[in-house]
Image 1 (spheres, rainbow, N blue to C red):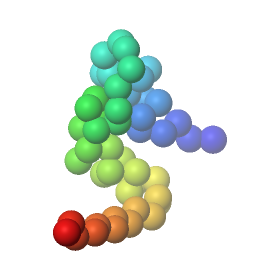
Image 2: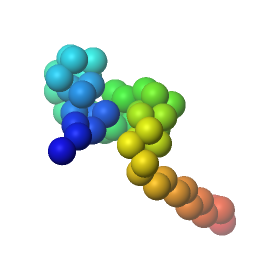
Image 3: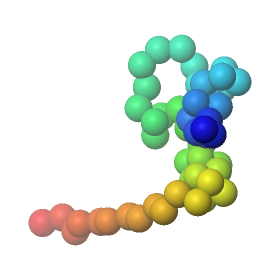
Length: 50
């Protein structure tokens, strides 16, 4: 089993202690690049506001 980028960031202490949303503590460009390397399929859906 391969360790995910989020778990790797935790192990390297790149995420500060405390409770955080992923968008607050992960570099999203790096995270998604690592996920792509692991052949995760990533999709995005947006909705327009009123």
